[in-house]
Length: 306
Length: 297
Image (tube, rainbow over all chains, first blue to last red; front, side, top):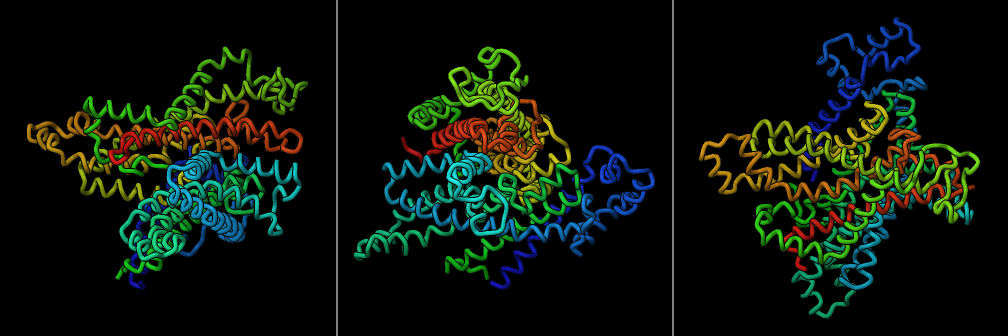
């Protein structure tokens, strides 16, 4: 297992180089002079020249990239054009909020999605199955930000049960996490249903039933346990969608996370923060996929990476 | 995002070039009530987009502050927004913008992704390695975030929204087309064309591309739904289509400020997005099921 984790970490290097190249050229794709864009419209020629030197834009492109890589390796993501704070500090301050939202949403999605998929697969082509299938399709098609707004209208404006936005208590987490989970729960339910339909028809499930085991034991210990690998894969892949959804959900609920930071930075054309936040999002996505790979081995003893 | 490869549509592309295959496909598609419902909903949206000037005479963007935030009534079935404009009128005109963006996004994805996927799968070797590593790097970012990053560089507006979302979908097209080319390039007719001295470009254009069109069609239907969602998301954040152009996401973005007084302003544009995306997803799912040999009617 240890060797596997080391190999997977090494395999991340080419992807990380690819990400760094994308982010590096993102700033160079800006129409006009990047130094002028970063300095702002009112900047003097000296200020622009200083920024050009600071960014190393007066040096050859390969030198610029190597210096960018070296700064990244030291976690130096530059300074925010708005606040002048180091980008890493801005990101670090908001990361726990986004992680809290993401973990709450994924937990909710698993809590509802997996049982919904199991029930749907146990009674295929009945009204329960059709209900779950249609609900999943609606979930996938629904804009998360609209659902968030509708939840605010019902639970904050009409019923006055929950706060409409902000942070501070556990009540503040409910609406944003439900909104974010709605999208992922649909995918998890769909995948659980299709995988369970296969495992429920396997020989080992028939054997378990013929031994006289209770249906609940057959479903949970034999069918669901074997269906977990594709479900965990989907949960990992959906984490990316969840990060995208977090940008919108955090905006609806004024949640001070990375998503809100990136939107504010785009509106203020604060490129160092945009680059830094996107890099952290990319890293999070890769690390979650690594965690999923490790989980495979823990869930299924047949998988041995050594 | 739902993908065309989910149920192995890629597997038997050449089967559908025959009359029997096509007839079986049409029969399966017609029997799929969800796909038919999706198709009908899509037709309604297309009709609304085309007939918007006839259905709503006048300028849908012209403000009329005396009638601001009116509740739904027989005269204004969906009420008015904060500037007194008809919400129904703006939703109908919004269908034009959203469908235009969806088509533009898919066009960008197709024009960049399909040739790269064809070349990557057909030639293999270093070209394949280079294209696939670039694809890996793009796939390391969730699609919406990639679109967001590109919009931050390119700027706001309809054209840049299309380009940004379109580029974010390129990796999926590359992967899908490459996977299909890998199965098709070993077919006897490709070998025969090569043996007859046909040039690689001609083989790709005349023999391989027609046989990967089926999964591309399915992916296109599913991508259009995602494109509408992404465009609405960017519009909602204020970095997509800009006011006063009627776009559903932008409408929702400005409606957010009036939730306590006029929640109806936010309700209807969201429903329009939901049903449009649902229609593309239902149709895409139906197409995929009809093309999957394992799926029996």
